Length: 107
Length: 375
Image 1: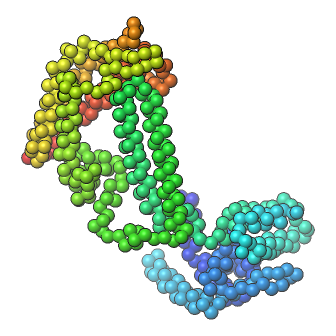
Image 2: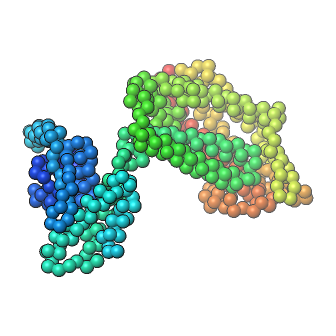
């Protein structure tokens, strides 16, 4: 098997699911660093240079809200799902489960 | 300033002023969180090299800043790229064709300056190609940036798509001289190539060939003259060209050959459906052309250049001894009479060899057509 091709396809496969994973993790309020750790703990490693811009994009789309708060002697930006984000997460979860069920039947 | 601040400064310089402070503060928190986690793991403060290793993992400042940029990630996005590529391919073909035509005219008008003409043609092609690609990219980038979607991109109609079938120049070129079956396969129905429908390209070719043969015959018998062919200027004075005896010997044969070629073209125009007959007529004409070419190569001496009291013979190289080194030597050739004669000999030898190759291919095509076509 061509390992390079596999890596490209694996990344493509993962890319679509990252937004769903981030939205799911942010049902609980987190700041960037702890969010990345939570994703990694569940098996979804994500580069900071991808995660942070994604958080800003999702906030810009109204799916997240954020606020700067001081914690551990430093100001940190905490993110959490907005009401719009919760609705989007529910809709995307249904979609994901549908795709998953279809693929399960095929695989 | 420590490595982290230097890194953040490099990122900040790439960001828009409105978001800069916010993004840099968040990045600083991320980097410090990672440094602290690592320090806790090791039980000591990190050195600058270890901090730099963490910054390497986060990414180059240009890449990190680019991820925060609003708007498109690329100059030409995936939606627009196929249109850009088609425009680039079509434009490059047109530029190449125009330059090739220009080169032909230059070489015919001033054969001694072949090397210079080649250089100009390449220069013209690359300048045109770069301008085209630059203009296309600029137009695409503007459309991408401002999210401009022209109606031809969103509201296309199937009946307008036929021209896109000509995107592959290899298929397009091959279809021009191929069988009807191949044309039907390669050229979409109703598509026009230089204003001529695919179904009639055979007749169009015959018409062009008929006209070209007529012009050649008129020149051959001395009715029309082209300036620059019989004499031209070279450093040191005017040069006159005298044809070698072989041309007098073959004069009548070449005239007959050209007239026969015109006759075949006439038959093609008169009875375009009689493919088998056309092929049958083409074979002896092409074979005669091959024989004339061979006689010319055998003669060797094709012309004499005279400049004042100096003369130099234009000699055709034997097809067996022709090599690409001779062509490579043309641009470096001196501008003296002997070198000009040598250059002319090389160019004409190659032209004649290519013509003979085309004639041989014509014979094979005609034989194939006879074997596969029924009138």
